[in-house]
Image 1 (tube, helix red, strand yellow):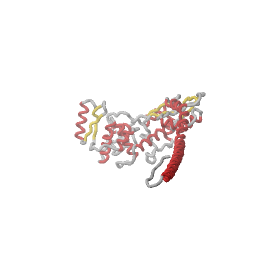
Image 2: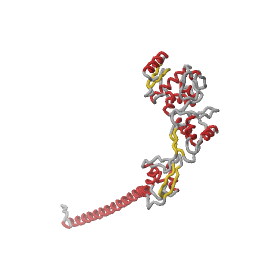
Image 3: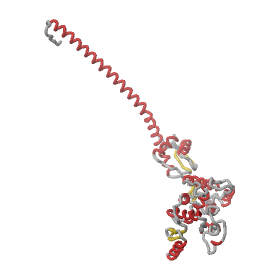
Length: 376
């Protein structure tokens, strides 16, 4: 026991005071021990709560990750081979559901998630051979190699006439010229850009390469090309503009397609057409004359043969487009270059370049230059 001496008191008093002080110190030690124990218990509770919270948060990710890993890489041995046909226009969700239904993969959702996260695809339509019970990764790899049975390919080129497209379709397996004409004459195909009373699809089929399934008909192919054009033309911003209807803008685009030698010149050729229309000047475009005569080349005197498509003998636009058109030509017709040009003439056969001019005198001079250089 420690002894604290207090002056002015007896030794007994000193001892008594010392005893009381020691008891106080012991009480404080006990209080501190109690505080330490309570703090330790609170700390344990906090740690336990944090652990439970983290477990609740992390556990779903662990479960999801495990589920996705098993589905991506597969579980068990692949089974027998099965044939699966992917239909045209099928999205990732539909493809995954078909694979799950046939027992190729276990989860269509896992297929969709993996395709997005791994940036796989796009996947072609067609018939595929898959082993059953494989992972979605292996299924995606098989799909990316393309179908085991390829569809027939059919291409529409910019600048082609409807007559050429019809003839090319008739050359496809199981299709005929009669079938194409019957589909066109049925009146079932109506573009939203066509004027009332017309079902002429000239200029309204999208130049593109199409995969044709075995069971598709002439009507199916025409409908696809028509829908593709409508979708792309709408995306390009085709609206009534420059005082013309959407159909008339398509007519302008078809003339640009046949006249312009390269992509860069198309908006300039468009400006010449619009500048002439503004002042009621005849367009005088050879390609329209050839279309009206159903010819590819013009002979001397053809420019004087009057048809609804002869823009030398008749003012304004021809009654219909004169060819299938590319989006580049359509964009040029929608957004022409701002110029004062009224004339152009071919100046370079190899590049397709033209010389543009504002006056007829300048135009005549450009014609002479083109003749001397052998471009006319």
